[in-house]
Length: 75
Image 1 (tube, rainbow, N blue to C red):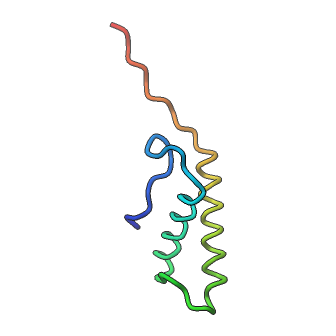
Image 2: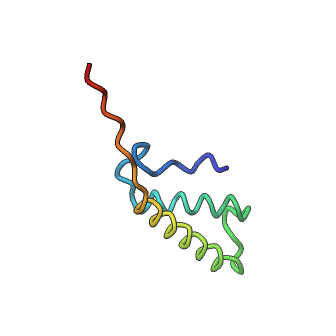
Image 3: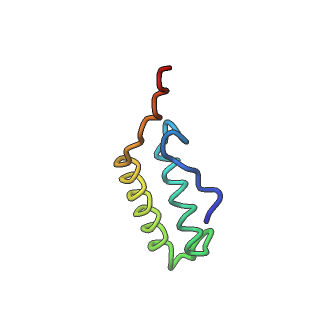
């Protein structure tokens, strides 16, 4: 999809910031809308979409359960 969107869950990323989430949301909305920067008459819809995607991303990351790697078996 969009190669500049990074994986933001553990173990791929630690210390994910609000800026990381906002950047990913912006890249997603840019990709699906086809606009790098929307015209003035589309700015409100564009900004609302970025905020909604960021909120959904935050909720997803907060709710994911990452399983610990299996412990090595003793010999």
